Image 1 (cartoon, rainbow, N blue to C red):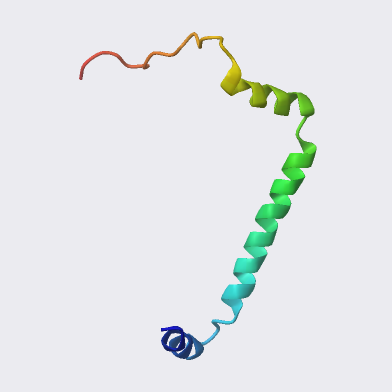
Image 2: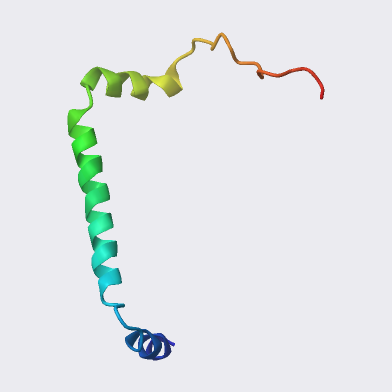
Length: 69
């Protein structure tokens, strides 16, 4: 199966750029994620970490439009 795909892929002109583009997108995404993680405030991380354990109720927990159509 791989030989079949490799044979057809080698006949396409300019296909060698796609792995480079994929690697670049992959690298930039994780680099951006790393920058985001280092720039976020510790208090925000603590607040987000406590959300699942927070017992306070949300004031607006009902649907916005409760009228029938």
